[in-house]
Length: 306
Image (cartoon, rainbow, N blue to C red; front, top):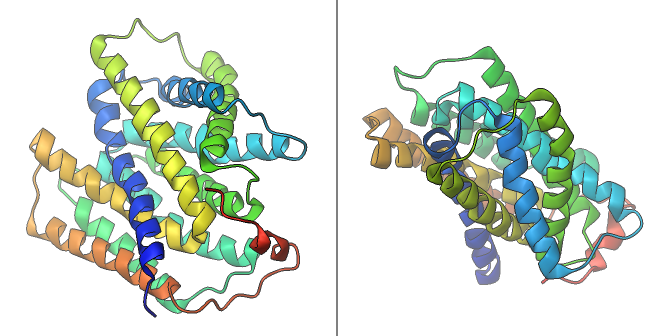
C-alpha cells in the first residue's frame, strides 16, 4: 500500500490549504471587526471571486449555473457564515474541534453519492483525529456556547456535501476557473443576507483591511484553487482528513502569537492528529475497492483538470 510520488506531492500540496485555513480563527478575532459574521464571509468571497473571474473570463454554461450556485452555497456562503459565527462565539480551537467531524461525514456521503467503499481504517483515523483535536484544544479557558457549536456542526455538514459534490460532478474547467465561479456565486448569495440581517459595517481600519485582504486573497482565492485541484486528482475521503491540520495550526498560532498555553496533553493531541492524517492517507492508498454507480462511471474518463 505504497503511496506514489505524484500522489504524495498532490496530498502535500492540498494539505497546505487547510493548514493556511487554520489562521482564519486568529485573523478573525484579532484583525476583523467583531459581530459581522455574514458581512465578513461576503467580503472574503465576493471580491476574490470577481478578481479571479476577471482573470479567467469564462462563465458557467448549462447545468453548471445551478451547480455552481449550489456548490458556492455549500462551500462558501453557508459554510463560511457558520464558520464565522462559530469563530466569534467559541475559542478558535473549540470551533475547529466541532468541525472535525467532517471527514466522517465525507466518508458516508462518498459511499452514498459515489459508491466509494468505506474503509475501516479510514473510520478509525477519523475518530482518532477527532480525539486528537479534542486533546489539542481542551484547556480550562474553553467554553461551550450552544449557538457556536450548532453553527460549527452545520458548517461541517455543508462543507462535507460541497467536498463530495465538487468531486462527483467533475467540473469541465481548471481549478482556477472552478474557484472563480464558486467564490463569486457564494459571495453574491451572501450579499442580500448580510444586508438584511446585519447593520452596516463601520469604516474599516488599516488592521481590518489587512485582515480582509489576507482572508480573501490567501485564505480564499489561493487556498481554494489548491483545494479544488486536489479534489480533481484525489478522492474526497483522501482530501477531507487533511482538514485536521486546520485546528492544529490554529492552536500553534495561538501559542506562538497570543502566548496561549500549550501543555503536554495538547502536544499529545498534535501527535495524534498527525498520526490520524497519516493513517487516513495510508488507508486510502490501498488498491481501489469501489462500487461505482453507473452515473459516476463516465467521469473516470475525464482528463485531469490541470
